[in-house]
Figure (cartoon, rainbow, N blue to C red):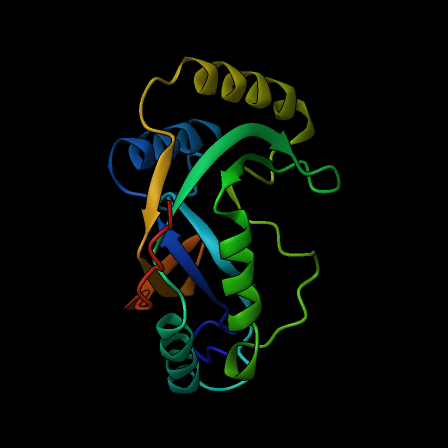
Amino acid sequence: MDPSSGHQTVYGLVAYINGTLGNFLYNLRQELVPSCRLRSHVSLLPPRLLAGDEQAAKQRIGEVAERHAPLTVKLGELRVFPVTNVIYVELAYGRDELAAMHDDLNSGALAYAEPFSYHPHITLGQELKPDQFEAALALCQKCWAEYRGPRSFAVDTITFVRNTGNCGWSDLQDVALERQPVPALY
């Protein structure tokens, strides 16, 4: 708990999306939810309370990062989570690797009973009012169909983040994925 604000401190682990794709996704999300200025990212660990302290969590992230190789994630189609009406971009490639990393990370100081099964994705719009939802979905569909830039990004660094309140997050630590990929045999 953060004694100065009275709210519980939550943490997450993300891989930021940079460049043209990251800017496009950020700008689209800003059109839908202007008050939430989150950098474009895919979550490896959705927001959670820690089972240990920050130092133990950082140590766990470092241990896991040593066992996972950098990867490329390719984005697919727009989707909507049925229960929450979150508009998101599905992952066409890289989902299995991110799920394996999530499962490896969700232990020790980072262990948490998540309310939903882990489903790696890129959030575009959430907590939309019912009267805003259809227009927001139509805008996302139009913009995604017209987008001609890259639809993939590298995940070679993961970032441990802490919630600062009011849809804000601060970066606590960047950690490079270290395992060398196995070359493909042709």
